[in-house]
Structures are given as C-alpha cells and as structure tokens.
Image (cartoon, rainbow, N blue to C red):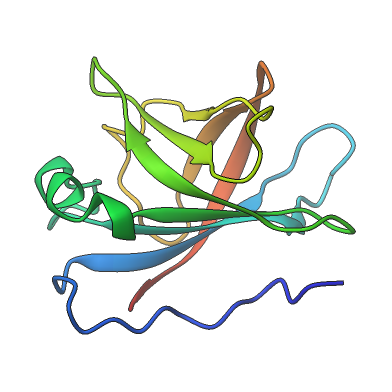
Length: 136
C-alpha cells in the first residue's frame, strides 16, 4: 500500500504563501471516528486569513495540486481548479472518467488546523477535518 503521508513539496520558487494542507475524513455514518486514511493533500496559496488566494493561484496554477488518498487504492493526482462563479474543485489528471470534486464554499473557507471543510464527491457531500497546514 502506498505511503499515506508523502513528504512536503520543497520548491523555493513558489511564493511564501503556499501551503501543504492535509484533510482527513471527519465523523460520518460508517466512520464514527473519522478515517485518517481517507484524505487529501492540497498544495495551495493562502492569504493572511487562511483563504485560498485566487491571484496567486492564477499566477502559479500548475503548482496548485491535490492528491486524493484512499485505503487500498492508488493515489489520484490532480489540480486545484477555479471555476467560473468563484468555486474551487479538484480535477484529476489520469482519471478522465472521474468527475471533478467540488469544495463546498471553498472561496469562503479558512484553511486552519482544526477547522472543517466539505467536499462533494460523486454527488455526495463529505466533511473533512483540516489536520495540518504547513509551509512548503
């Protein structure tokens, strides 16, 4: 099984606002304690309030990535994409048949350790806890 805790990306050419964010499945039916193995690793620029910075995303969109972690499955790598209307989604590179996963109100969310965010996966909303936000 692949390592579920990849090493941070080290890239001195990116602005200091870039962060590595780890999201883990929060409590829900079927997962009363949550599940650290059902997770996302997100690389994104955050402003001073912890929100995704659309200006820096625009300048460095190729560096804004996501890795979808699931137990007993290969990791899915993708991009953080900004949709018209201001929404954010994850678009997976090697899985053309996999629909985008949309962050619920990601434009308004503060990505701070201990907070919660929701992601629409295959037309079902799941809540994730932000377990770490670290510098690259």
